Amino acid sequence: MKNLKKWKLLRSQIVFKNRWCQVRQDEVELPNGQFINDYFVNVRPDIALVFPLTKNREIVFVRQYRHGVREILLELPAGAFKADEETPESAAMRELREETGYTCERLIKLATLYDNPVKDTNTIHLFFAADVEKTGQQILDITEEIEIVLIPISQVLEKITSGEICVAGSVAAIFLGLNFFSQSGWQNFLTSP
Image 1 (spheres, one colour):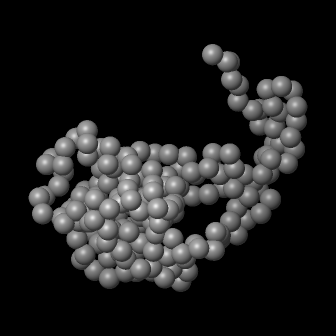
Image 2: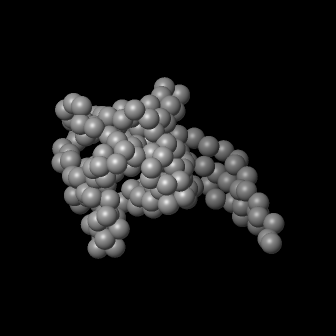
C-alpha cells in the first residue's frame, strides 16, 4: 500500500464572492515538491437531499430546469443550507416541504457524501423519508419552477438505466435507499399500502 500524503496549504484567499458563487485560490505544495499557486476551489454550502416515499410506495421527484447543464432534469428534492444555521435533518425536511408540499414525521440518514471533492468544498447529506404526505403547497424561490412527479418504486431503476434520472446525488440516494430496504426490511419502516 502506497503512503499517500496530503498537499501542504501555503496560502489561501477568496478571489470571488457574491450570493451565488464563492471561489478560493489556494497555493499548495505537492508531496513531490512541486508548487501550484492557482488551484481554484468552489466554496459551496452543504446539500440536504431526500428520498421521499409515499404510503403507496411512490417516490416523490421534482422536475426542474438546471442552468449549469441547460437541461430540465428529474431528481429528488434537495437544496443548500448553511451548517452553522441549520442541521442537515432540518434542512432536508424544509427542502422537502418547500419544493413539494410533502412532509414527513422522521428521517433516516442514508449517508454523507462528497459532491465533487476535486474542486468543491461541500458534502451531500442523503436521507430517507417514509410515508410522506402532501400537507401544503410549494414555497418556491424566485429561480425555481418545479413540477412534482410521483414514480412507483418498482419503476425507478428502469428510469436510471434509461437516463431519465441522471443526477448523481439522486442516483446515489436511490441505490442507498434500496440497499437500506433490502438490509432492514420494509415492514419496519413503511406502512403497507
